[in-house]
Image (tube, rainbow, N blue to C red; front, side, top):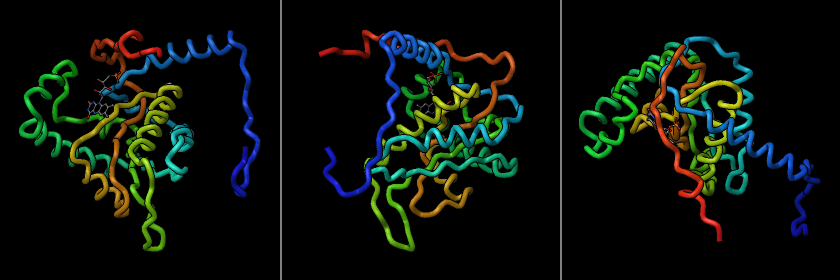
Length: 222
Ligand SMILES: Cc1cc2nc3c(=O)[nH]c(=O)nc-3n(C[C@H](O)[C@H](O)[C@H](O)COP(=O)(O)O)c2cc1C
């Protein structure tokens, strides 16, 4: 039932048989289970239009009142990547040496990570996602809603689209991330949310052997 004078349009729904739904949901599960966070990249180039398709996928995400409170900055310039690596490593060094708790450092041991982040220069692209808690139009502030939820959902779709395109990424959160706003000259209403190196994995790369929770552990039926 339409309760507004604003325009509506027909929704085009692709109706699937139960068999097709089962097959497609299982295929997608198998595909997504093969996604892993990668920390060692190849320098092999990736065409920019592929990255643009991935970003358009993320930007199609739902958002509070359709405010789309995000900007996806794509960095391929080696000088800017070098600046980002240097600033990120400065923060990460402080974090590993002083800011992280003993429990946190213990929890990170299985991943073998440290303050060094060579992938920030090696991966052909860095996608830096910014969230906008308000829009800034001609100096006036317009509030956005459910910004963290909206940008988180868009990032999930971004990561799925990267994997679907045969590329790999790492969800990276060098903390604090203010340096990204400075290096990329973002306006005052944008805050860095995630930093994702994107490209192809280094040859014979290994990943930590991890277990995901089983369906029984994460699913409750009422
Ligand atoms: C919000 C978030 C922040 C993360 N930050 C980092 C990070 O700064 N550095 C890193 O090496 N991995 C980071 N990770 C990656 C996680 O360690 C990884 O997703 C987790 O170990 C599961 O591995 P998988 O992605 O291969 O399934 C982050 C993941 C998430 C979701």
